[in-house]
Image 1: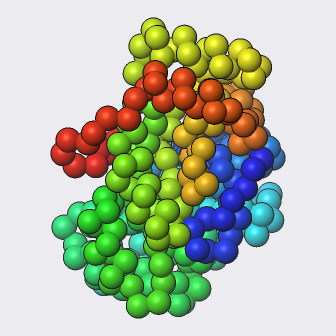
Image 2: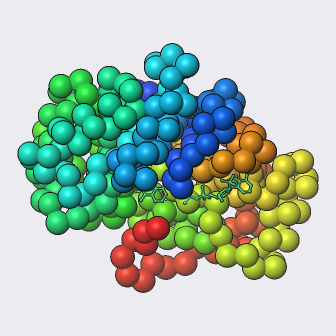
Image 3: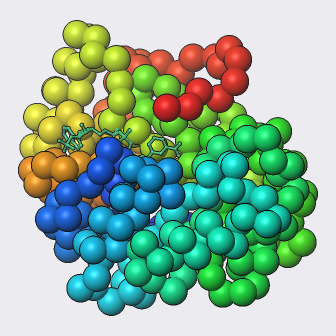
Length: 272
Ligand code: NAP
């Protein structure tokens, strides 16, 4: 499994990780960890803490330092008075002393600067090893980064897949310029059009993989990109792990680009 630097954190993280919503399956998560998908994404929101509990159970046998555990705070908890308590809740459910990265799940009604100051305090307290955001566009990212004293935003986790490529022209350039990891959620989503499916199938056949593996490899082709597919089926977990090492050539990339073209964004950054 290929690894790359996760923003400016200094951590080398597998390009393909594991999502945990809807609720994960312990055996599938463990198989994924054994195949190198040690970046595990969860959130206090998922199943009202159940996802974090299940991740805690799944990761228990593994050395903590071999894992990269990410959780997210709900916007309503991202306040001066509630953030530290929300983080403690996540740590307790995950049965760990620290998070590798802690994200604001999306921008809500709380002042972004207040949240960023609170995240930085958690970093100083050793509760989290890096901080990041999710569903933030470049304007929000700029505002969030400006509120930080010393820290930098480690990642922006956004909806990015073959059907939703607009982050390539918006959040991805920001990530590249600011040494920030660009993490794709719902990376397997795509419109099921006959012509596009045919292209993925042909490329998949040449590489002896499935169309989903080709789609994932395309999504993580940029040097700052990561993906967190969710899979409860063992065969899917095993397939996803191979995407981390699949090298698509220029012709493959051009054919996928033509079949699922980048379109101009009209309106806000889409969320799932
Ligand atoms: P996804 O990972 O793109 O798709 C998951 C679906 O694809 C499941 O039905 C899964 O089936 C199937 N699948 C997985 N691997 C496959 C393979 N190799 N071949 C065929 N099918 C495969 O979408 P997602 O679950 O929406 O997103 C992934 C993760 O992103 C979530 O779990 C969550 O952690 C995160 N997320 C974050 C946000 C945010 O706001 N930050 C929003 C949404 C999601 P099986 O389960 O049966 O294997």
